[in-house]
Length: 591
Ligand code: SER
Image (tube, rainbow, N blue to C red; front, side, top):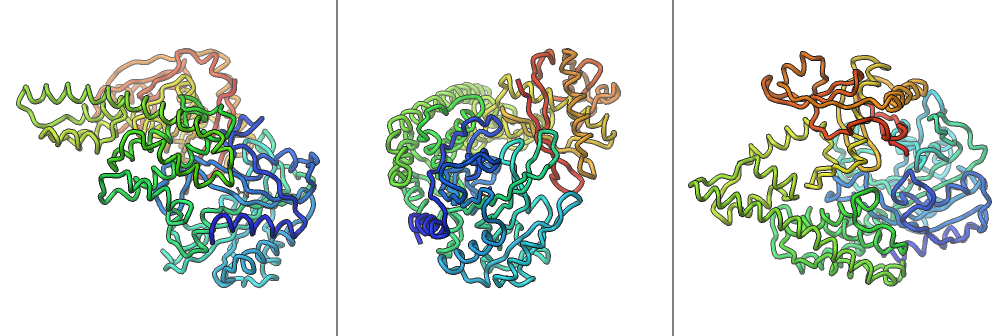
């Protein structure tokens, strides 16, 4: 089964059920500042899911290009991708659960011919707010799925949306193919990440609207929103182990192998990262709008990160400069019959890739100069080991992955103090609160936006302690130019009132335009002075302590804004479970 055939079968199946085939939308969302890219087929349809009349009627189907970068660090495994195609069908207050589930079952077992025995489904188990979806359970049983292959799971698993901050959402039912692998443990079930069960389709029953204050109200409409992943489905249909073995990736991987000159134990992961990231970059650049080009903010930054990460992995594979254009050409050739905009924008795609590759090469070249300087100095002093600090500087400032430094060093008969590097890395990470998302891979991002979000993280930490109690402690932090993500210890879900209180406290400090002060002292003194310290170092180690007025005091590497005024309005987008006893908040600063 090819992707072409799958798209055709899907659209025609739903056409036969009264749906109108519509065109997918741009990858760059229009009129929705809360997300950087289109992440699902429902996304461009939000106004119609909310009640606006769609010109094509109440039953729609399409194929949508999607980009999701939340799992970017998982790319390289068998199934995670940053770009994928989503097949979808929608009911705009037309049919509901019975038709949606029956048609999903019919398409999977009678058109795609999946063995019904391999099909496992999950449904929403209910919580204090929304009851369990027993209706979906009954419909699944009615089409022939036995109780033991129906799994009732909590909101984390079986609730979808909204796509941005507010909007339509609801309980869903997800369909998984059992690959036949052994269960990884007694508790292994659909949704487990071990790879036994692969999710291919999701039917969302959109009955709710999430409001700005975080509460849900009935949408007053019964919509259905479904999404089937093209790459995973053809992977399963062809009995393959990974999406990279599908015909969508084979030509890309072959080109990468043709250009590569190095092959070692790590090559598979690097090949996959180059293939995934270059495919995504090509689609973003080829979207037709031309508005997203590599840069330092928002979607532009995501694109830059994808390209630079591909360049680094290409280097590991020994691929030549200029490879980005060659790979993009394969992607364009392969997809242009489905997405003609790629061919129309070919010149733009290739020239932007060329420029970004050159810019990154230049940064790397300055790193090379630094490396040459340090290594000759070492030689002059009869030393043979590059210090961990130097290796870290090459990594942090010039984007040199450690492996590359080791390689360059060995060419000059030098070794690298890897333990020292790891120590410097850890220290930097704990001191700067592990906002690894931004400097991982050497793309230190100290833009105005990330700096302000970093300061907001301190305010949030303190406000959470004030509202929830001193047991709240930071468990993780990740900052992108668009948002902060903060994990903290707390045993239960925050109430909408608590969320509001925290927001108000943070905004109050911002409106006071408090100033931020930095002092250097020993860790011991910092702790004695009452500073919050996650940093576990030697007691006499010198650390930076940042104080925000009298409101917050934390040991941290910075950087921070000097005054809070002008940071914008702090808003919590999401409060959810991260792991047992740990909650996760995503928040933004709005201008
Ligand atoms: N919006 C749902 C999802 O992304 C179904 O398409 O899974």
